[in-house]
Image (tube, rainbow, N blue to C red; front, side):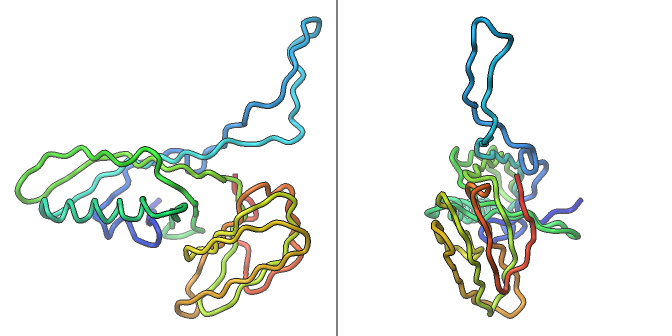
Length: 217
């Protein structure tokens, strides 16, 4: 399957980056260590799995970057790093040629180390991009440019609404309405990620939003 990769809307292809392989994108999440009691006079353990909670997602992208010169190589590398070092989480998106996109709010913890040989003319570098999605359980909706999206929620514990254009809202409380006006051209899609303890969220209504993924784990 052909995929278009982007970070904050910047296509990897614009930076001369190709993704050879990926790990962790749709893999199952690791369970956090549950509370367990190991009675000496009983078989096995008694484990509390009534509220399973999961570790952050780690995504690994094995990449190579091509540039026409050493100067262009550094320009492309810096353009990638510029997106990764911005404050907050960054929007990673995989868009199949056909099919629904996958979106993630991530940060780069380990930096980027590129294996390369300096030379005149075309330069090629290899690197593994390691990205962490701190809140991997999410609900994804689609808004469109030139509209105001509204959603009314009851939330027991704070969750985050990543509107898809760099704006973030923290939500908590009963019957709270949240609105966001999208700029851009009419019909341009924006992907709203609602992330957090979704098991304790109740959605009452929404306007100018359609469901892309009801849950992603």
